[in-house]
Image (cartoon, rainbow over all chains, first blue to last red; front, side, top):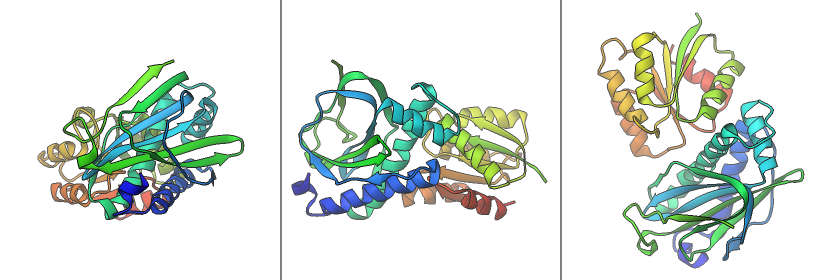
Length: 182
Length: 123
């Protein structure tokens, strides 16, 4: 992604925007402090996921996908703080809360990145919960990954954006995602 | 005077959080009605009278801008203040909402003080 974004925004700026947006949402809406780790570029997605993964599409002159990934336990902990209700298993409330969290984090990333990349629209988020599943965005571009932690729990916020002319497939400019139960 | 308030958002989480934040902000409330989209909101308004509305923009079935259009074209409802709450910060949508008659705009994430200030300025 570095080479594609270099003309308009630096990789470090992208990581910084993701960090600020995530910290603001966690502090303001969840009342939970999180610690940011070193951002990195992910060329190859993980083989399998366990836990909760969300995706949200961005479309404009630049298009792509934002994603949040965490364990089921952390998703329950975040949702419990978010909704001020004790939640111990991933249920409809957790999926809704993680979807809204994704909407806020990536929405705020989008708002800040529009100053560099032009206007973008945001899709409705998709949230998946399961064990041993694979998820792919059908493109070859790398993702910027910013890891966060709260105690022993981990959360990753990921973003993949490319100029519209490089995005394949369909009219809205957002590439489809594939989900495979392993 | 306690307010009757309507929250329109497709996320049950956001409806619940906004209700909690309103209590934290010590906004005097009598009843908080909830709707998942513009269609549900209009159905509630046909039955109940509200003093204030918070509405999301991006929703299925009938989005916040369509809902606002319907509301402002109705003699009975057009004076009810509507504040749009959304992550969608694009100037075009904010301007469109303002032109359609929205009384204000609040970006997620929001704090109790922001909610309180917004209501205080409009009631």
